[in-house]
Image (cartoon, rainbow, N blue to C red; front, side):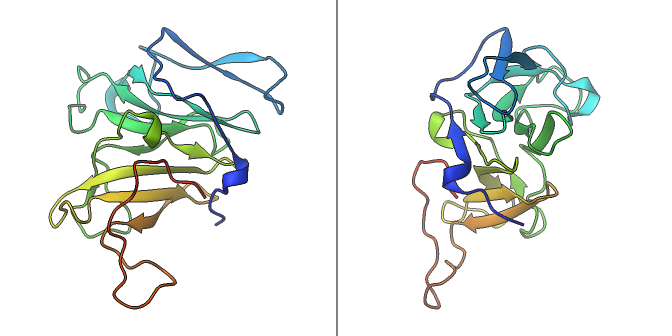
Length: 193
């Protein structure tokens, strides 16, 4: 698994999208001018229960292959969706079209039992990143037993097959440092790999 690299990433202007249609540039060149619909407010949000629909989009990110990733909220009026499970990250990076990467309330893999993803913050500093291989990286808070203000924030990355890997978490050992050196906090910036 190769983590996303900074030079693979192309990021859009940070602004929230609350429009009827959500378009991105398509094709191998971001300059070819081709537009296509990726997701639409009120349209089906892949990977969600009971046909949940998109409600609000945050600023998308694009890679140099013309794929997109974005955070969004889904309609809480859908069965199985409430305020503890209505945000997530979607990406086209896996190659099979738009897919859910992670959703608020999902189990956070590789963490103690009962630890779940919290809300996906809607701000430019927390937009996901997408490398040229279609791997998504993002920052998210955690909730559950044993989670507190000293170990809540985390950074995640998709592997080549799409599985999520915990890259860093507040309170965890910082690799390559002396014993007892732990991450204490993350700046309010999106992860850059």
